Length: 451
Image: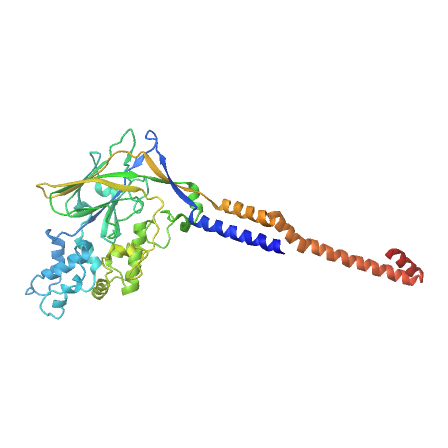
């Protein structure tokens, strides 16, 4: 009994230690060299969002405010204009600005008041479409159709346009611009010219622009701005067996593992967007109109009172600290990164002002990468079976065969033994009956048989 207890205790402790190690250390990331003669590097995806600029005139917004006038005696209300700008363009919003522009006109009878609903319609009417936003696009000096390849998408920054994003188009489809680089064509320059104030994002193919992710965000606000961004890209590759372990083990999610999101693919920025939207609905029973992800999204949209609620609880434009998992107050977004995220680094920036009305941004990759990351499996599911089987075999002698023998012993063999005993008892009883009929011979016969 002591040996049995020792064997099972040792098995339990070793299996427990192994499973903890498997859950924490089943995936490793290594660095491997690239062959520049064969390997191809793709230019990152680019997102462009129109931004509000106080020195710019918005004719469409003025027409919207003119529509609020109910009589010719009403004067144009510039406070309402400022209020609408802060609702349509997130970069102009500041904490506490919802009531500050509208409260004084609440009880006014002969003045233009702030609208209390219909914000998605006003945003669509004021924000620029693709043809109004882009002047010209060039890849390695060759002009391409901006609006063919920059596809619209709704984000926390409002309506944006993404180039080569798997959220909007199929990879290498008709609306995918081939921007591959190799030793034969190492040049990688993307030049974008804008007619309005914009923000550009250099991002991975599964990412979307987000107000909280500002590392690779570049603003082109004043007229005549010309910016140059120099970047490097280091790719990551995943072994096929990485998908065989759970996301809690590998600590990342593949883009096609789309769960509980309205976007086409998963990414860290998508998860944060959904997290912020959920927090807004949970706290104020509505969400900002920029959070409506498509025409089929039936989420409740905030009116004036709902926006006041978001404003007071700092959920309109929250701080980036909400993504810190150790926070206990406010919003906490527990999001995994994407398994296909590449490492994009800024190695240089230049900007200058030119005497013109447009804005421009040049994004250039400074040299092809010579190395990349690879995520690989250290222990897979079959290793768990083999290791646990080896531990049980070492301490208890157990195996798959012994398991079947155990079942066989208490079913087939036990049943066969019972049936055999019953038959022998029946045969003995029949022999006794025959011997009794023959008299004393039966006693002599039983005595001989027992001997």
